[in-house]
Image (cartoon, rainbow over the protein chains, first blue to last red):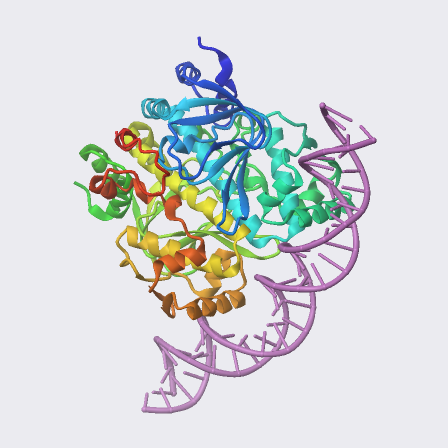
Length: 269
Length: 269
DNA sequence: CGGCAAATTGAGCATTGTCAATGTCTGTGG
DNA sequence: CCACAGACATTGACAATGCTCAATTTGCCG
């Protein structure tokens, strides 16, 4: 019966997990403190020992680290509903920074409350854990993106990922969305320089696969874009979306022909 | 009272968590199946839906993905005690490959058993979850390594990380260890080519910071090596090792001067 | 209209990749 | 004990992708 302010997180957890009424209530009952920050604000700083985790209610944020030479690398982009600093509840020292990419609305939740929630409600712990596992899968893909793809594929891959993630949470239509990054930030996310990101975006425009006006992207040819981006969305684990599982319980085309459809039910239980 | 075959994992979980006797017993009682594989064997393949997770008892393994252009990227290195495919228990489709870097001994544990363990024993779930969080921190560092560091720093960073991780689990002395990778594999881990890794290793030798004979590394100057590697080990979260917390409960020098020493006790409980 | 952030462009350079040999080490069979 | 195979390491010459530096332009807002 508390305010539904924390609903974006609940919705996100329920994307891949079935929670019962008491679990839902426990999540919504988490004590929090609202905080609104402007673009560029660092919510968490490397080396600090924060006492509260932040949960992104509205706006976009990123995690990043800085090298001794001054280079900045964005390691993840966060969208509304993300429990951005969940890890802070379990790991004492922050190993990276969290920064608002634009104006953000955050709910700050005490680490102790998160730990209690996790240890008393296995289903909630599991849902949050799965979230961190999907996040890990995204990290892995970013390692490859930075390590083994050329500039065009890197930038295109970032665009594909953002488009699909925004669509999955209802923040974009299937083929049109707004990139929450400017070119400098895209450079920091892809390990390129801003100048080269610019040239690469122009090159992408010339392929005709997308219509891009400033940060707004309209994907005109998903298969073509996926191809040059080397984008295989298995790593986003959309196959486990609850909505999807209800629709068609058949195996996805990603798996060869290995159809243990019961594994879906098993995983759900 | 089952066989202590799974002890390496238990030891690893207890590195950062305090478990009671019943939790320990539950872990050691997990039903498993032993499997020995040779170098190059793929234990998990991208796109598959495995039924069992693998736990590395002896030897070294890696996770990797392959791009459409044929480039290979290693995204993590696993050492004995690592629950290599824990994520498989919660995410249906494997999004990457797991391969033995040398002869490995594995324990295969059914996903269903892992899930039951996690949902009935919050302390165990928490320990495993923390493990995945530290793994995430390592992924983040690898994104930076591939994205924003030059070849020399990249290779040196990989060496620093391996040395410190091996030392932390007692598999190496503080300054001498064996890299579990050949130069081709180091190239796949750092996003470089084998040729360039070779040149870079020679360059590293010339700095005099390490004595290297084939895969054996003797670090002669840790501060110097850390410096050229831009290596800050905060991300390995060794500050939370139980052994360390017992020794000195003072805040580490990594944090500015923010000494909520109770946070350690709180986290431990 | 001025000011500012962001985007765009060009020219030259540097790091890293590619290709193709050659060298080294180790274990095996004769 | 030696020749050989195979894996791994090393080297050189050249190409290319992406970086640096330095303008210039565009769009937006007060």
